[in-house]
Image (tube, rainbow, N blue to C red):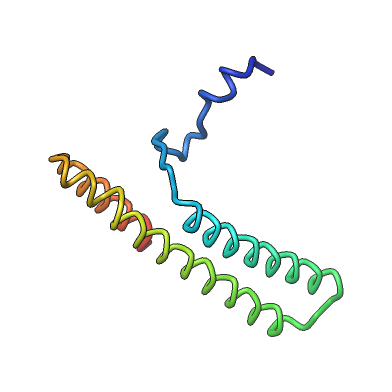
Length: 108
């Protein structure tokens, strides 16, 4: 494994490499949503281990999908109100193209 600086500089190939300082309240809300989703996924794992009926599992997976969509809506709204708006105010209209690409990926 590399030294600490190499680790900090490394990014996954799915990330843009950009950074966002979030307000503590926003971060806490998003983290709480993810922890609930994580709990739901663990619940589905338990259902599988306990041979629960298929349709019962499907209903829970649908709830997880809905929770993830809700997470995305909140994060997207926050992104548009902060990152996108700030960049436009600063004259960086390229952010609009980035947003279009992001929306296209979300709507697959």
